[in-house]
Image (cartoon, rainbow, N blue to C red; front, top):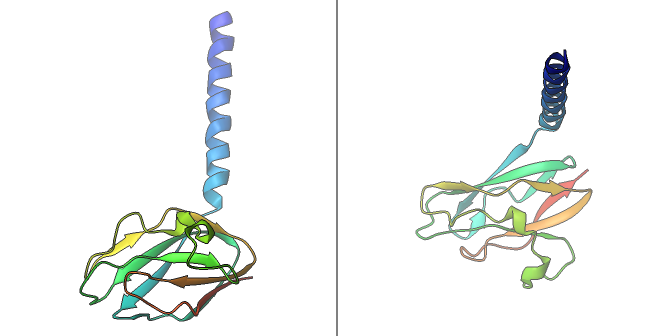
Length: 129
């Protein structure tokens, strides 16, 4: 009888853990794809909802590695401590390839994005509603 109770407790515990994981998966991570060409991002402005995003950066014909930096608008972009580091790509993006960032949670506000390796303008804006 004790073994039966123990087995039921384990099964119920596993079921609860699976349900909790399913609820977390309902908050899906979305992908924002940004293409870089020599000297610029092709998308200059985006508007997205608050949430968690992965940034996919595509190097389209830039003859060297590119990267990605995201900063809250109004902060000094030259200071790494102002960069949202989870938005950095996980590896430099080689010519005609793509890389992604870690999941990055965006809250309501405005952000600027740029590539210091390409280099691109810092007037690209990502707006979160």
